[in-house]
Image 1: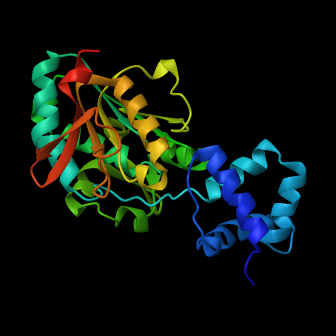
Image 2: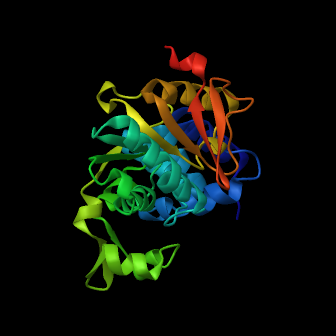
Length: 277
């Protein structure tokens, strides 16, 4: 039994208002499959009944649960590989030369359960050029449950099998019962916090040298993409770098960025005119 049109419309409007994620027509199956466990946990027979109850009460906890259930949390270690090669061979050595021993700050937006920021930390560990620099990695996600999971730095055998080379597993993970825990020298560089990308960034974030915002802009409409890119440029150092997903680009969205070829990948920098600000 599929959810009715009114249920889908309410959920789509709610998710868009809270996260700017667009649930287009045809995603009814996704809404039903993601919300059915919440309905059952609430003792309700189906998603339609759950949403009717949500409309009546609309508690912050229930709204957050719905938004988090519909947040895509697809991730893996060293996902797509090429951006991490560019980080190690081009970006980190260049920043190390420009920073004269100062800290290098990296922000991983939409970090899900933590594989990306920990991958970045492992890359930094394997980059001799930054051996004398402090590396600070801030990882954020809308989903509180994912952030809590990422903080544990612990992963199942199935999770470490997704993109993690065996040699890296041996070097940078420790056995923790039937699971694996990220080595403290890798994990301690990363701090996690909850953050909604469509809301103003907190002043306490500071400025970053590198921003990873990969495979997240594709879920937003054009005005939201522009707004996020504008605000990212405000927290990125004038000579910093932005990493986007392979299916994402700034062209036609925000012309304040320039594309820089980096091996078999592409990265982005603020244009010279934007750097003057």
